[in-house]
Image (tube, rainbow, N blue to C red; front, side, top):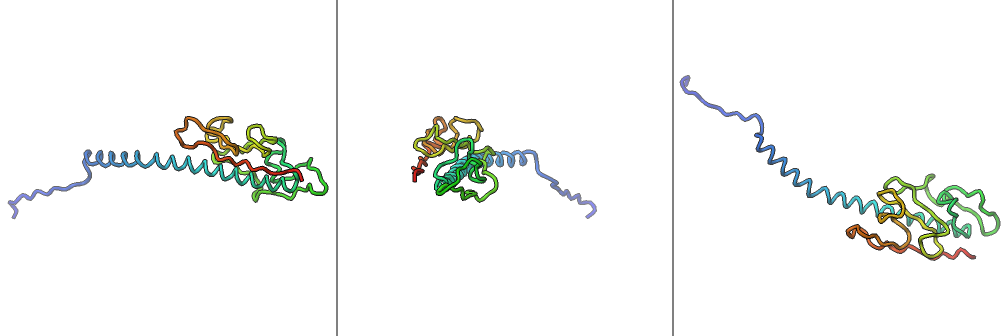
Length: 173
């Protein structure tokens, strides 16, 4: 047995070719999966902003029922949290807030404050304009999320006409 030379092959790792094949497979999987996740996140952010605008809208409707008017542009959405100093007192005109369950106004999914204008300048009817600046953080661009009807052009169908959320609120009692 001493004369027999047994050759043992021992394999300590992977070859470069094997590593490159595994890496190529992983890159292809990532290329297929990541765009789907990014698109889902964009849609989720838009839907979140639309839902928050709807919540602000409901709070403004409750505010208008109590005070018989919407806060003006200067008072803004802050009037939903703290009573405006110039709010008239008297029968039928009482602030019964706060109208939001938080101490701070919500921010849109991109960290921007929601915009507010009353009397409305962009929307139709007598309901305040509420909007998010969208992902780019710039006003009056196609990616803005609004509570009035708009059409986004050139966004490859990611969103089209916004749902018309204008609801007539009779502020004259």
